[in-house]
Length: 306
Image 1 (cartoon, helix red, strand yellow):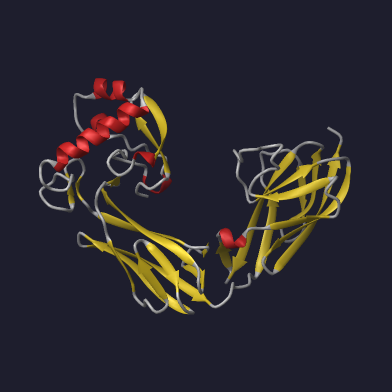
Image 2 (tube, one colour):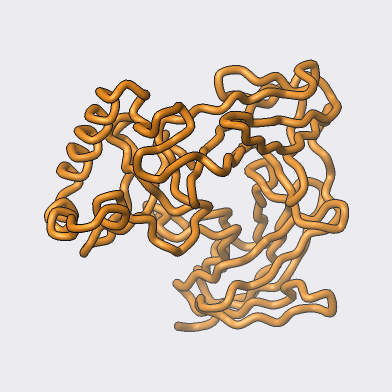
């Protein structure tokens, strides 16, 4: 993904940093891991030019130096008269070569592996990134279009669901194209099934029913157990903020459920994110219900002494 308030991890010898792109377009780092791959994408003076490792080591000690160096390089390239890309045309990077791939990123309230979903009146975003050999190129913009603006309208990087139907959103530039499908419904669609399971590595033990869903969770007082909660539609998974689970406990003094974050007194800054959490409050047994849209699943929670 390109800059814009997001967080990216990258490596600058000999240190690794997570850089928040608050620097703006001129101070943004010059390379990121594509699609969250674990392979480090190092800045140009660390990996793409020889003889600069000592300089990279010095730069690696300060976010400020990283930002100032990126800014100086950008303006120096701009002075060459090609918009900072420096490769002789608008699609070529001085550092990485000519763009060979473009990726379209759509953000909507729901999505599945095959399409994005919106409800009439909802808004989303559409962004595109260009790459050369897997390295992100700063400063290239794509033209983003909707195949049917009467269904999904594109304007200034935003999507608006106008009426029920479907449309293809395309990103084009440098002779490259990527696209995604958006379906719009008049009202939120029901789901067909709901899977609830305990995530290993957290306190507690679980017993599942014959369908593989959680039937009994046992955990000590004061501990929290992480849950995976997956909505199913058309035989496959569906994701999104519009499918956030809700919890109902028969006795919250014994155990409570929370979506996404543990209770504030346990994790006030939500350092660990999960679909859901069950936290033991006092010794006892409760029925816990998890609901996503039109489907509810129930299981027992037994809280034991620490």
